Amino acid sequence: MPSSPPVAVVTGANSGIGKVTAAALLRKGFHVIATARSKERGEAAVADFRRDVPDGRVDLVLCDLSNLASVRAAARDIAAKVDRIDVLVNNAGGIIGERRVTKEGLEETLGGNHLGPFVLTRALMPLLERAAGDAGEARIVNVASAAHRRVRDMNWDDLSFARPGAYDSMAAYGQSKLANILFTRELARRLEGKRITANCLHPGVVRTRFGETGGPLLRFGIALVRPFFIDEVKGADTSIWLATDPSLRGKSGGYYAKRKLARTTRAAESDGGARRLWDLSEKLAGDEPAAAAATGV
Image 1 (tube, rainbow, N blue to C red):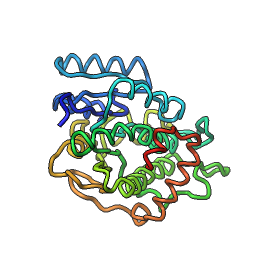
Image 2: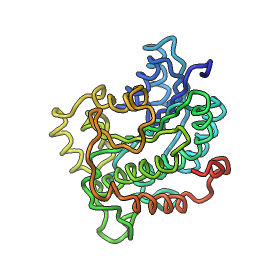
Image 3: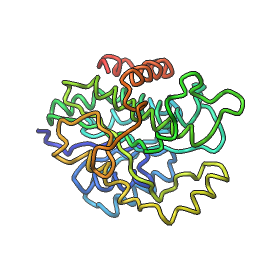
């Protein structure tokens, strides 16, 4: 067993369920690497963590998941701070009201919600493998959503909704959440025998900053139903459980809601779709870091 505290990386740890997840892992004795896109918001969250868990160890790493250069820089920063990762929680995600594209030319919702976490996970794989060797298991937790049900399948012929009139913010978000599930499925398959598990979850409809970057109609709709949303503590519960509960040791490839295996769509259960998305993601990511490529994942 490692003599130093276990290490957890939580993306989007400056607010919402990511912040609750990071705080809970701190209280459980993890050294937490909290990522945030905004330096100001990230530093404010870290100040809160240090006030609420004064004996905890937390570091901030800036990471914009829609920018692969930022993702790779964040992976290097994390590797400079720790020599292993016991838990990776790919929590950060969002919805965009108007169509935008990343520097790689990919629609930004899919870029930030799927491709960024895909690249980050692969870049951090050597550190996860080291933890699996030391502690016997490492875990990857991907925050997906029941919103994957809004789409029948990945929009394979037009992933970026580039065709005139094709863009719809909720369809783009649903596609990105379907991608989270397919990524988890294929990742779990590739990690068989490596003592690293990968699971994903639906957190529930949570009262967070979600939708702030959406269009006026989306913001209005969310404002109307926000009083019926669950709070951030309830929303983070399944993420924390997947990251830490001993009963999940060795269990991989699942999609959970309220701590139970949940049903998904036919598209989300497609092994062929999962492999196709993986191959496409590798191409979209371009120059993969040698350390990640060497792991075979």
